[in-house]
Amino acid sequence: MAVGRIIFLNGTSSSGKSSIAQELVDILDDGVFFHLAVDSFNAMRTKRNLAQEDLDVALRRTRLGFHRAIAAMAEVGNDVVVDHVLSEPWRLIDCLSVLPPDNVLFVGVRCPLDELARREQARGDRPSGLAALQYDLVHQHGDYDIECDTSAASPRDCAELIKEFLPRRPTPTAFARLRVRYLEDECRAPSR
Image 1 (cartoon, rainbow, N blue to C red):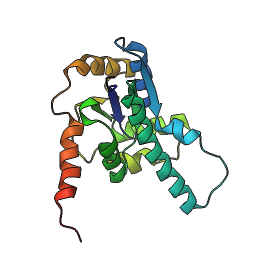
Image 2 (image 1 turned 90 degrees about the horizontal axis):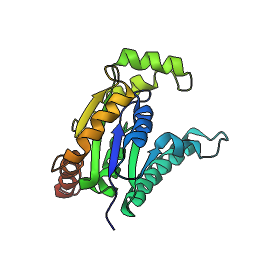
Image 3 (image 1 turned 180 degrees about the vertical axis):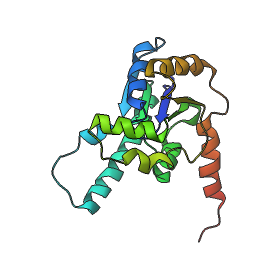
């Protein structure tokens, strides 16, 4: 059984990842794609108030489970479009350790900060300033297979760009390059 393809969209909150993912699921015609969104996983958790420490632990476990759900879907041959916010370095490192790097097309979803703030306010369902807090963090690893700017292109245009690029993804992929940088360097580091 062939491992499924993973189109991994990374960007701040309100950058347009979910809109691009929905368009991709609609236009990709060479397989059956599933949209896996970290927000959907967060929405499944209990809604009662938790102490901040308990919430932090629950959110970390949620993300760890989300990464493994992506891997499990792909492992059994499903193609997936992932929409995620890699705003903490451990999230990227965990994804690099559990996802098959040669099957991941890593897409940077960018948008200028002023437009993110405008979108965030218009949405009204996100804490004000969330995108600004994530802005310098989500792309700090600096390596993608392809990038799109949602202030300059519609979600459909971004999806078309990604669709055209998918069969030509590079070797090694950005995930493979990042895996060498983050995981192999970690293995070579002297223990403390």
